[in-house]
Image (cartoon, rainbow, N blue to C red; front, side, top):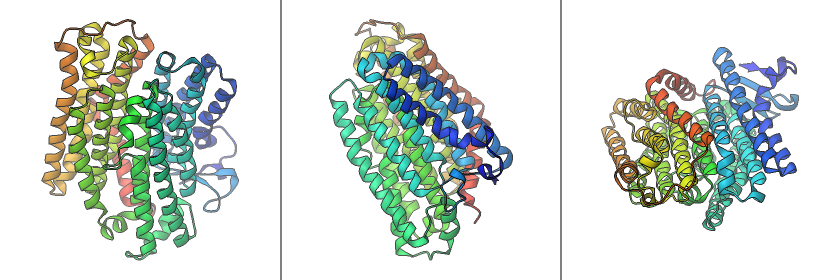
Length: 503
């Protein structure tokens, strides 16, 4: 473990954990103060592009020297707030940073088209605020600090969703506000129960104390239940997902692409952290029926929401239901409670982020050009917008899990995990839900390529929007062919989580 702030002085490299959160936070404040949309866009792009560079340096440090412990303000943990970074959350920091940068580079022209001029600077400020909150949730080693960052990111998300051009965006934002508030309340009640039991809020300290707690202790079980339900509301765990379809369907494309690729993924990470690192495998899956409950809910998500996606007439809403289904794959990786399954869940967390952001950005390009997102109105776009629709097709193949795409790799790990556990019905669910994806992705492909154009292309999508969409499209192919890059990091994170924190 590297105690950075305690031993490395004030050089820039030693302050990377703090910069990972503070750069977008300061950028958000400056953007909100200036309120000039062009300057706001420039600040957002600059801050967002800096984030992957910081995350890569942090990940390299973790891989080279092990876990980083960064004491905030010089107060040593567990008394002071600690940023603690291991392979699992270094992986999440990199994911959020990369997706934030790609979407920010895509954003300016898309934002100018979908958000009124007087609201654009505020939207950029909320984008950076949301990024800062999500990065903070991933990097902090304090249970209550997670709640603080959760509220920062959530308030920004509600605002981003409300910036949609339709009135229904306001309703969607309000629905998410109500459900998100319930989730945060459940989480903080769970943390309060743990604090009353252990006397600490430091995650690493909790991980050392919890093994001594007897398996049937009611406060510990209640704390776990409240935390899992609270986080489950945030990550749209079936059947607590009802806020998500409207939020994704009516938010601006930039908000939808960013939230779909980051927000639920950070929530899944928090679930992983509490279940494996804090409570531990034995308590979480032996003292409680969590594995069985998560497995059933994951299977229902994969099947019911894939089935619902088939009948959606709005492409963004269809992709939203698909997202709930894909969260089911991640939860299934947790429920399998073996290294292969957990590797698949973590890998799918990364792969789905790039795939779904690519799909939403492709739909955003089509919306910019035609002003429509209904499936039937995309007729003929395969001929009139070949680059955009080719990106959609490739990302759609990744969503299905076709070999040679990123989606296949994580699904293969999940199949391995299920077969190791002897759960062949889980393998069948994975296969059936993947076949269902063929139908809802295929519906868009059929309309785009095999029907005559219905809505004219009134403007050409800007080069940067198409280029960023294709950056993610190539990533879908790259991570499907070069499997060790994503797979090795996911496997290292899975081993770290299965082992717990120095138990």
